[in-house]
Length: 481
Image (cartoon, rainbow, N blue to C red; front, side, top):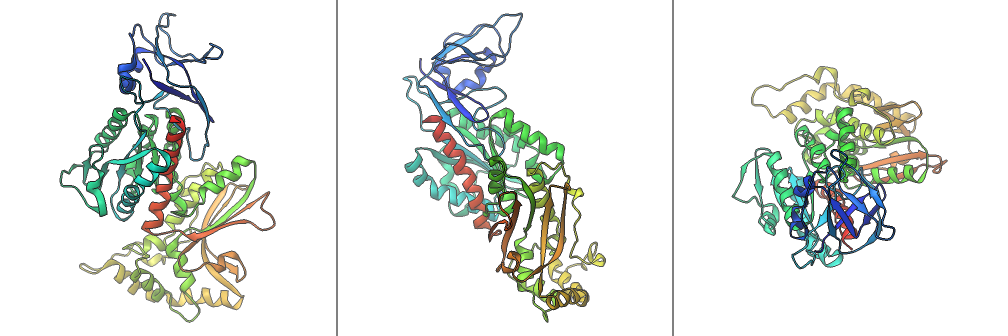
């Protein structure tokens, strides 16, 4: 009998020549059922024995002081170093479980495959699926790892696909065999596909909703990695955030959220790298909204603020209700995510925000039948004179206005506000809808580490998430090498 398994530590994957399993782990071992001999007794978790020394590496579970085990021969022995970007270790499914690679009755392993469940099929979701399908042949040729979409959900419906069926989603198409959305069922379907092939499962949440975030801990604890541009988990209730990270650790899975702050612009990864390398971050400040970046890059003295907002709306930069952008809430969510990366236990409500929405318009509603966005811009005109004072004063001082978010680890505080910056400051040099972030650290002084580039749009957001998918494919390749 031949099979392969691994136990994942914080930084190392170990492949062992012998694994001893308990009977109640057999359900998770369905892919290697033909490889397993007889089972007796009851145990909760696996035991691994190092072939070179014959010593027990991990023992857990007993009943009445007796351990009854099943021995399984393993195909190969290897030690593979792993990176720990993202949250959670790579690999094993479930608390203390051992992820297995599919093997046939003859002992030949199947092609390692990453099975994707996609939640959210709007602009970003369709673009992501298009990128995944388009890149899959080249990635397989390069890495020897397959990736396929086996389920897609949108707000009210979903489709469950068989292996190789994701061509039905080409060019943003929606297959006809839809059914009412059920994220619990979708999760079971994606896991079943991974179990059938001996591969891995992964979810991508492209929504801006809290509902999928409520499933993250469940998926991660089952060994299913999660990648998302959705800021709800990273900036939502801190207790849920902690539970998600704990689930990733216990499940040996990965919680990947690079796209939550900078879309396709790498912001979280450089920050994590600095911290892991031992640098000390003194301050983080940045322009985190592509919409507000465009508005303040465009607005010049003599221009009416409402006209610039109308222009941004016409170009598709704003939400249907421009207040969603001007309120600064989206920036506050991004700042909260970064603050938590720095170890601050902040809630979203702990971040003060200087909203650009006049107090009189915060609860305003348009008349029946009116277009909300157009009607809001019309109402905003009454406040152009107030905004004109701000830009005139900044210009007189040789400065520009920028809407920024900041984190101060020393005081444990974060904020979102409209700030003034000298015209030779990096924030003054942004163009179009650039995002930019400056990391002041012990090593990067007196000038900060600056990351700048496009931070909004379906293509770059999907590209950021697609990069997370490739990361998990790379770890799958390493673990099966």
